[in-house]
Image (cartoon, rainbow, N blue to C red):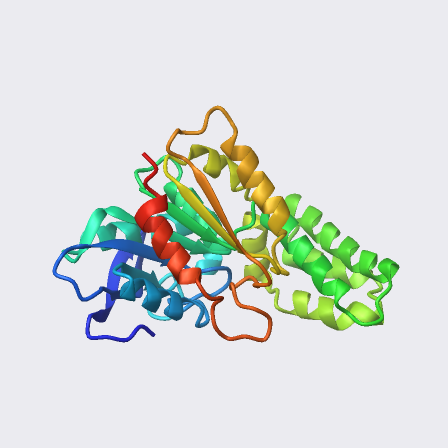
Length: 316
């Protein structure tokens, strides 16, 4: 967690839930620009599985006030994330932004949103058409969850020793059938029967088993609601600068395709003139902007965020 006497636990309401988080401010007499940090997929808490604290600490040391919070139904927050949607999570992000802006230590007009992975989709939805001054996404796919998850599965299959292309294709075919089942509204029992109807090769059984064994009825229903979320309409509705950061060795997200989709959206005539795009790619870094085998952020990552918020997000 963030250290220092000016970090404290807070709670704030959002759409029938009470969300809990950590609010930290720099040692300064003047109000500081603020950053709301929104976690990724699954039951992410305010630390996002220990990914957020070093970023939060670095931003506070750079002069920013930072709020990170537990997803609804996680940690100290009430509610149930599995009952939610990207829209619900975006409502929570806006509630967090409003809370942060209301703090006397924070300069409201320069306070924006940072979202990691799924949190990138969330902050783009929260900022779309609104008065958010800037938005940052890290490792945010430019395509739907269904397309991104297929890429992640295909990448994982490529890393399995001894697997043949035909065997990998069988696992991907099961995945594709599940996506189609979700689109036609299949319940969990039908989805389970579908998986059981395939003869999964032994070479990929453990990997695919790990993927499917985590799914229960609640997660299946959540996945169905989320799988075809497209972030590009939200990108087109932005009225603020967008910084998209990626690790060049991200095995979960098709980085080049995501950058291309974001860049194509920027060229659309309907984009707001302030809705600029900045892309920062960190070679050899993974989904959490760490180099394989390392436990720390790549050098310069937090500095890049701080510099862009201070200078790059105000192009006019």
